[in-house]
Image (cartoon, rainbow, N blue to C red):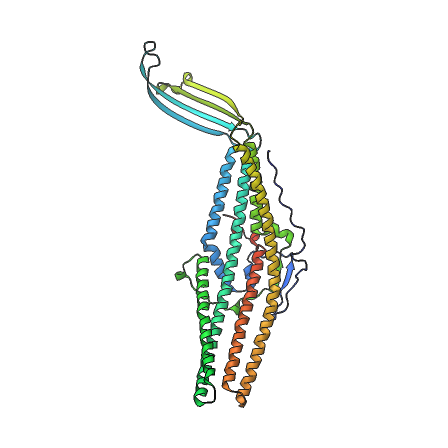
Length: 463
């Protein structure tokens, strides 16, 4: 066949995603994550978070999301286009029937003038020889388009699951932050009342009251943005689940009910290029562009066609099937493009340019994929360090609060000092919640960056 044969790009020879391999994270909140290189990613990786509520919402989204159904329908469309493309390998057979009434006067004065009826019944068979393989390259291009859409569907499947889990983690974190913020406001308002009483009694400056009132206002100002983010995340979950915000039931879930996976499978770099959907889409698009070079090459070469006709015609309908009415023809045609104003040549050049662009796009997709995996592996290490520091802050604030409460009961600390310690503890708790959520979200990002386990899920790759 004309045109270059397609060879899948060679996988990078990297044995790891970073110069210094990342084997595990530090211990944070009592958990260290171990990275299991070469271990397969489960098809339903989100179940490793051990949250039945989360599992149910992901299942609902995968069953009802319109974007996923659109991707399935597009895959079926491409598959049908491929089946239609196979038709070029078979003879084209057509049948026709016609009736004609004509007033005929070929040579006035020589042949008699008359009105005739003509009935025709015929069949036509034609076959174009794929001498140069251009039609086979065209079908190859269609097959590559099916592959590209199949991998696009797998990518949509994994991205949807990742978005749902990420949104749920964000939502439960916003709820925990709002609860801590409201508890902080209760304490701050108590501080304002105590400071007011002390200022009235002349035992404290009124500037203390103003400072506390300013702190209350500043803390209150942080609550509406959190509420807005919470509501927007709820609406996002509704859309991802294929329903309207009004019909969506807010999940009852806390951040403590989402458990961090300790053993995290990590696909080897050599396998990532064979499993990550966007890389496979880029490879399929490169395959299609490569096949199109053969299509445009064949368009510049001679084209051989065989055709034949068999039928009958008669001026009387009753004689249409008689042997005297039969006719037939058979012939062959050879067409060689001579001059098309450079169209065919530059179409061929454009196909080569498209293949080069697709090859560069493939390489960029691979580099981006490796970067994302390396980034998330590193991020999980930083997340563990940040969470460990935030856990220490919560522990220190908790110990300080207990000490001040004991001093207050002993009469050597004021209630205002107790409230200040409560506020510091709650602020540390907000930071802790944010650190926990970030660690969970980066774990989800790693699963998505590895391509998930879509190849173990038939529903993700079939229309």
